[in-house]
Image 1 (cartoon, helix red, strand yellow):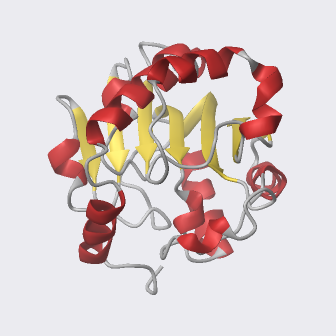
Image 2 (cartoon, helix red, strand yellow; image 1 turned 180 degrees about the horizontal axis):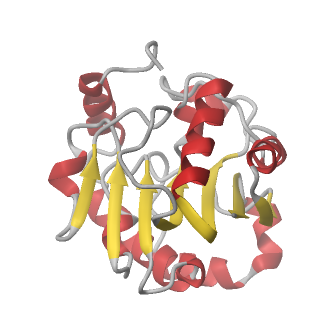
Length: 222
């Protein structure tokens, strides 16, 4: 990933991209974690947030042990109490023991990897570190429904759909448990900030996901 943005560039990009949105994003992730993603996260589990950014997901998680991984230097300043930060290239060997994680979660991150080889190596590290029965939860923009807007971000490199990611996960050894092509709307860094009660309603009304969803959700189990 030598051609990807440097840590300093990542820091500047995310300062600009999410300026003034921290409080709103925390409220959104509180709902997403507690009312949706918690079904895959037992409270006594060990969880890694891959590409944790400003730690909005991992800070909300109830777990026995929590890790975040990101090259952005700002990640450490946003990590909540008890969250352990790993600052490293995710395509290199993770500083985590074999079969020590129960959940690896990643949101809007795989598209930032520079090559398919980086994705393959990252998935292999997730597989190595997960216990048998552990799961990888991946949320990200689906290029099938965002053919132009996908490239509006300077650090988007790898185009993915739920099918291409699912295929890569299956090749790594994961058994797919969920493969939803249209889950959440696209982004919280642009556009209006809708009231959070609308998100609660949206999560319950699955029949409207195909109308508004631009992000896939893929869950694989080891």
